[in-house]
Image (spheres, rainbow, N blue to C red):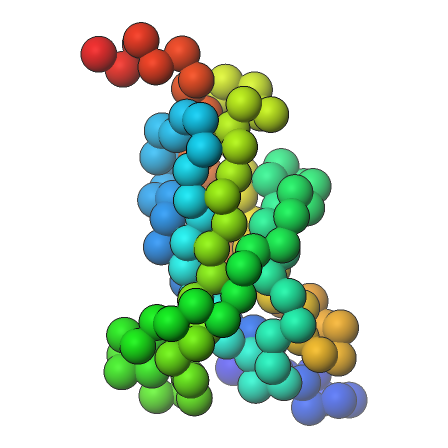
Amino acid sequence: ILCDQASGNTPAFGYIDTPSNNQFVDGFFEVFGWAFDFQSVLRVEVDVDGQVIGNAVYGLSRPDVPLQDPRVRSQFVGFSYIADTTKLSDSEHELVIYVVDRSNVRSEIGRRKFVVDNNVGTHQ
C-alpha cells in the first residue's frame, strides 16, 4: 500500500473490465470498470494516448466488487465511458484510467492497449 505520508491520502484503486488488453475496437465502444478511493471519487478521467478525452459516468452499481474486495465500502463504484474511435487513427492506442479524489489527488488505476480498426471489412 502506498501512502502520502504528509497528508495520509492513499491512492485510488480499481480495475478496467473493458476493453481487454490488445482488443480490436471500432465505432463506439464502452470503457467499463470500477474505482474506489477512501477519500471519495470526484471524477474518473479517461485518457487516450496522453490526452484526457473525457470523464466517465461514475457511481454505477457493481455489487460484485465489495464481495470480492473487502476494502471497498460501497457497491456504487462502477464507471462507464462511451469512446468514439472514429476520432482516432486506425492503429494501436493506450488507454489510462485516472481517479481524482475530493482532495484533487490524481491516481492511475490501470492501463490497456487497444487497437482501432474502423475498416471492419478486414475482420471477416
